[in-house]
Length: 466
Ligand SMILES: Cc1cc2nc3c(=O)[nH]c(=O)nc-3n(C[C@H](O)[C@H](O)[C@H](O)COP(=O)(O)OP(=O)(O)OC[C@H]3O[C@@H](n4cnc5c(N)ncnc54)[C@H](O)[C@@H]3O)c2cc1C
Image 1 (cartoon, rainbow, N blue to C red):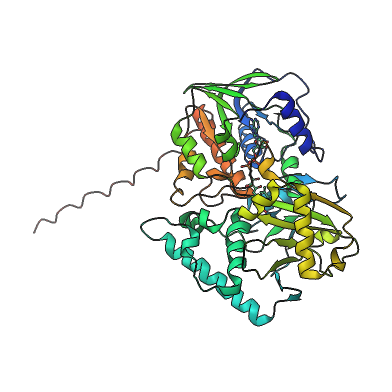
Image 2 (image 1 turned 120 degrees about the horizontal axis):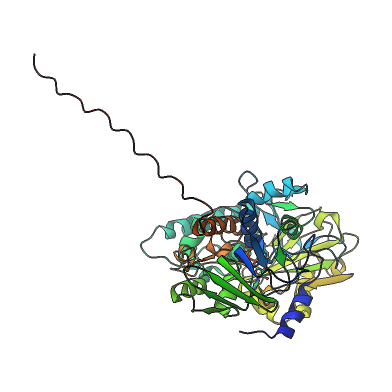
């Protein structure tokens, strides 16, 4: 897919929902040269650029849209409170680089309320029903883990216990679409089993995760609204073409999503190896969208930041994040093939579904007064083309393939992380890894000294019999 400059500008404008914090579009002409060029100012690109800057090397980030953040984008304009249009949750407070960085940047982080409420039609699930559901989830997870140890990789769906009854749809939604953007039939059991736990105690940033990435990019030289259109590369150097001019560099880090890479929006001279393109295709992005509704006066009667799912025997379901930050905004999240089909019908259809779904669970009075609405459509965002990667059955090794250098180019981004794929943490770590590989490539970072061989123990003299 190619885009004209005009299409590109209108696409960027559509995304420009909030000013990028501190991110000056490159006022001066683009630099002609840099040590390393980074393509994309999402989490991976900003992490890479910060690492390169910390090594005192010249870096420039070129970003196609008018904003920093990529799939982390906080919209403060629509509802007057931060609305994360992309990623919202960080995971594992003890190990997450993002939680640490958020605290370091002076932003407020807070845990999601423990546990989720489950609706069974108009009522809350009873204790026995919740126990049954949780047990079903544990059994399903265990079955996927067991399947991942088989000789041949299979889909998660084929491993799922067949007796989940009325909870089958909810279990499939929670483990598949809601966790990865894809239905379980499209997900590799090995990829899913290797993923580090991400449902444990999610943590949010009160100012928004997009705000965090924008803040972390504040001191980075970057050119917004500057899509890379062609990259000429070799083993020695690289030239990146943009509408604002060319940049010659000794290495490049490419952080665009797997779907953007395979869509061919960036031309490569020579072509990048088929091996990498095939790997990216096997790690295509799933679908995940937020449908945000403003419901003044808390008509759903829910507590701040409450998360609600429903008992469902199909995947035509959603997740509600209610009363976000005590605002009157709530978000109905749709994902997987159902979410993809719904989003393809456009924003009015998405809002209509959200209203119908809430009516089913809380009654029509509760949704009578929707004041404002807004829905994301990540599959249609030209510089993302989807939500997050997951591997097709048999394709888990593709993640490693993507980390293999291509001449002096290095791929980064969530899809390249073997255990934290699909997350902001994974994107961040992948950016740092690629930056270190690129710095090594240009001689700015030495390979770690091989561990010194253990000193040989002096040969024991054979005791000569006295
Ligand atoms: C709705 C949704 C909800 C999510 N929820 C969570 C969550 O709760 N927690 C979590 O951890 N993760 C979540 N994710 C996933 C998370 O957002 C991503 O894993 C992460 O942000 C990816 O970062 P990245 O840097 O790899 O890619 P991106 O953010 O996609 O960055 C790539 C950048 O490259 C730019 N680009 C593309 N083409 C070009 C070009 N030709 N020239 C220059 N620049 C270009 C793009 O504009 C973009 O800024 C969610 C994603 C979505 C969509």
